[in-house]
Each structure stands twice: as C-alpha cells, then as structure tokens.
Image 1 (cartoon, rainbow, N blue to C red):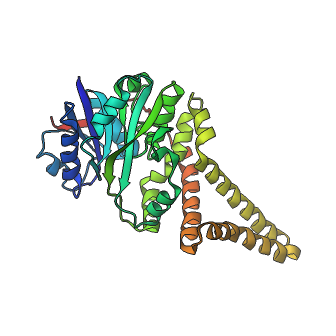
Image 2 (cartoon, rainbow, N blue to C red):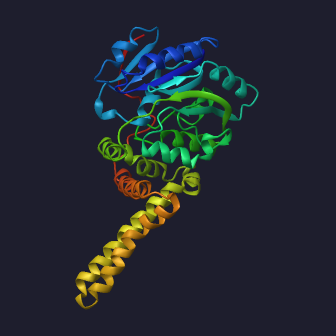
Image 3 (spheres, one colour):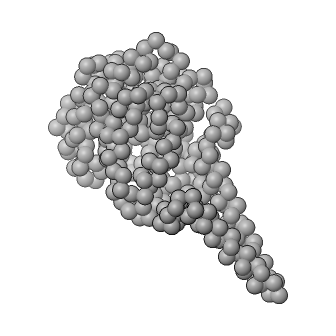
Length: 335
C-alpha cells in the first residue's frame, strides 16, 4: 500500500502524454505514491513515450473493451494507493492539489472524494463555450453530486461500493461513481484549489457529435439508466439528472412530429393545417433557443446536439451491459 495512486487514462494521447505524466509524478512526490498509465490500446506513440518514465503501464487486451469507464477501472485493478486519483491524458496536474485534497479528507471519513478547479484551456469549440456559460454547480467549490474531470477518491469507499468506474459506460462514468458513493452515505467535495489544466479536443462541434456517435460515447446516458435499474442509486439519477428528462422530452417531440406528419398524409382534407402544425412544432425549439442564447448558431447546435443525445439515449439503453465488477483482460507493459 502506498499513499496515492494517480491513474492516467489514455487513448492516442502522444501529443500531451509526457506533460501529463511529468505533472503527475511531480504532484505525487510529496506524498509518496505511484503513477499508472491505463492505455486503451493506443495506435500512436503514447506507450512508447510513457515508457521513458518510472511508471507502471497497463494496457487493454481487446479494442472491443474501449470505453470511458474502462480506463480508470483498469488502472484501479493495479493501483496500491490509499487514495486514487483519475487523470485524463490531455490534462496537466497542478503540483499542490493532491496535498491539499488529502488534507481535506484527513479528518472527514464521510468524504469519499475531493476534486478541484478545472482550468479549461480550449474554449474555441461550441461545446466548451456552452459548458463555460452553463457553469454547472458540480464544477464549483463546495459539496457536489459528482467529480467530473477527475478527482481523488478514498480507496476504502471504493472497495465498499464494489468497483471504481463501470467498464460498460462510454460516458457518465464519474457521475455513476458519484451516485453509488452517495447512495451509501458518502459525500463528495470540490475544494477552492486548481487541480488540472485541461486541453480538450479541438474537433469542430458537429464533427465531434458524429465521432461520439461512432465511438458510442453518446450512448453513455442510456447505458447508465439500463445498468442502474433496480439499484439503490437509481432514485438519485431520476431526481437529479436534468438532461435525462430533456432527452426524453426530445423523444416525445419526435413522436409528436411523426403523428402530425402521419395525420397529414392520412387525412388529405386537413393536410395543410396539419402540415403547418408540423412545421411550427419542428421550428419551435430552434426559435426558443435562439431567443434564449441570442445566437442562431448556438441555438442550432443545441437542437442538433439534443437530437443526437436523445438517439444515443435509446441506443445505449438497449445495448447489452457488461458486468461492471469483472476483471478487465489486460497486460502489464511496464512495471
């Protein structure tokens, strides 16, 4: 057992993996610990570059196991730390965060996880602009419902809830971890201390939606709902996850549009009236979001994004789950 394990999740991160590893090594040094690279079968030079550093490198055996949830759980299988931190390969850790996070948890056994302030270094894409404007509560200091973008977790709490992150989830893995911990009575906190710099993707917004569909990232919410059915934390998901109900409403919007269109075809005498209602209903969300955001471009992206995510909700719900706590087939590349 060591004090802190930093798990770096990576898939084709050759551009930034060196700085991520160096920052993790520097951050863990005052406490004593280890850095683990959990690689999802990168096809670039990620592993080659990482092999230059004194870290443990573990790698998936099958590309079919790739998901957002698999990385942290893969690293956790090999971690020895009393505390475990999740770091993405496109991040740089701040040198003093781990020390302050461990101190914040020292006398509070009910706190299972602590995050810090995430500094977004790429604010050019529509997605990051929208995220910055929303300023979600869970990214601000105080008690939070999840630790998006990484956090430090108490190992004893993770052992109590069975596993770290759900290997089946293609997104929402940190939310799922948060609700499992909170359903057991634990708390999560974000302290007023910068934790990481995040160098997010620069893919154009609409291309990103298509890429997320192809990679099944967009299916994470549906997978989350499916795997949470009958679990103690399901109530928290239904009560707190506002986007779930937004995407359910979008599906209802689709159904209403289909009914109007079918009725217009089936009843030719009233086709003009039903056709007009169809067009009005089709354009209503765009008009409402244009007024709210004062931008047709941002409003258009919002409506398209809702539709992609609603379709992903359905697709993910009907995907066959993989057992979350089962060991992940992997190889130790460097120990």
